[in-house]
Length: 208
Image 1 (tube, one colour):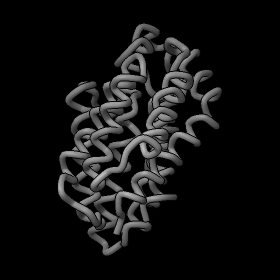
Image 2 (image 1 turned 180 degrees about the vertical axis):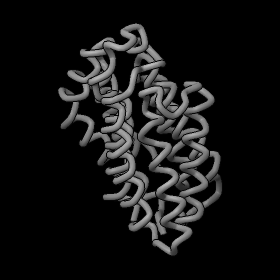
Image 3 (image 1 turned 135 degrees about the vertical axis):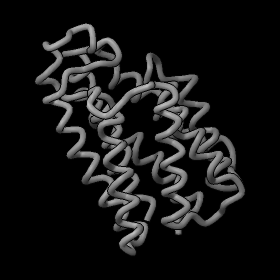
Image 4 (image 1 turned 60 degrees about the vertical axis):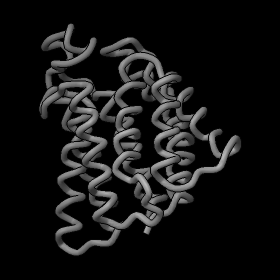
């Protein structure tokens, strides 16, 4: 079971991981976009990591709601609304839930990914963060159906996310600034898929 302490550990670990990969994310974004994904995500996640120093939270839903609102207000470009919506939708799913099991987390992750879809209107193969998140969610669901615990399901999700991330290299971007490049976007790893994979790898380290 994951408690609010696990979710705060997740956000703290994600912030640290994003900071460590900030230059890499920026380089990926510079090749096909504005070149600010790393710096924007570092700023926003660092602010989220400070939240527990400023107030206490009653449960995972309460905490994730604040994380989502913080990301919306501090991360520039498209990433702020997308990641913010992800956490806000997760928060709604986990309202008044203190101990989160595999099924409940799966429902929350599904709500978060659906929020990203509503915001970004992406499809599989568009070379976006959804190309990492969609297979991750599918693998998570299958692992839970097969009887996996939280750790096993999250490990499966993180592995699938990494495979989905890598697959974006062979795609032609159809969303965002990268889509302006047309066929020239092929051969570049999508930065959003890269950061989304870091998010799920961090979850696998901290939520179980």
